[in-house]
Length: 451
Image (cartoon, rainbow, N blue to C red; front, side, top):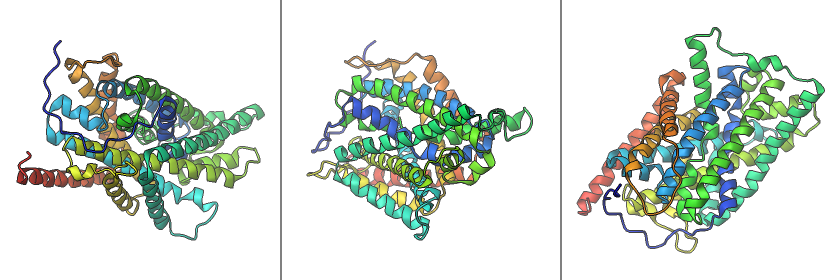
């Protein structure tokens, strides 16, 4: 089949991004991006929605993540550019307004995720050390510090990610070790694993599980961020398939096991009330492990989540500037450090606004909702773009996977998931801001005769 014609590409910015990420770094990057705030901070809120069967939402979320990850792997191999979902949407549908909305939703999902991480940093884990400084101020200073690290360089940011990933993996390994000890010692209550918070077996149970899965899906987001590093990855066509699939498989397995241990040792009411639910597991585990040490590990974990999400959102700004979806100034690169300086500043300011107005569960659910909408579009885009051939080999996912991926994403994004109204309101406000920016950009392009 002949390759379909494309609209002329916008010229590359003068200073290209540096290809500094190899296969091992990318695998750790994907794992580190997925791990973090979701499992460390929102496990309790998921338990509050589903009850003792905490493992089920994470298992379903794992399946949904694999379906969509396969679509991203095909597309990033086909189009190894930094714009990610925005690029795929434009190539598939060629509707600039839809492209901008998708891109803006992805960026906002990264910001709401980073904001949830900032809120988690200032919650119960930090309270093990101090509660003198107001939580909102801590969250704001946290975002500012991460912006400074991002400005220093991608190599420094990714290497910091590697260290923090190893730390957060250590924390989850501690939880699994505590669970193994509890099982061998005959502690815990296995009967909880089959208990559901919703009574009955009809609509209430279905919406309870779907709502818990939608919130729990927040723990799986991150693999989609890695495609925005395509221009900073060595040989992306060969590197991404292995990195994304390994990353999702490793984190999915860990999540299900951690959920089993959490429910085994702590009742769901206790988990629900805590912004540091895994700390409750450590305290109930029957092993004399210092709670403060685990709290410190958890702080590193949520730091990692926020670091990567702010980094990804800024790279998305860079990619959209290259595609002329945002003003070219958004793609300006700091010449000496070769980092997208304007993008980093812009997304950090928005993140500060979010941490000042939202809490962990609401911000996490907003992240999941925005990305589920995007994932539905991406899964459809894979099928549409099958007619577009490129001049290099790349991974091709079985057709049934994007079909199932689109259906599952739409179900979890729908009112069937029984999410709070504030999530839809927050997402609506963010989209309204995006539409306003789109109009401004169109006017600027028209004034300069570039439309």
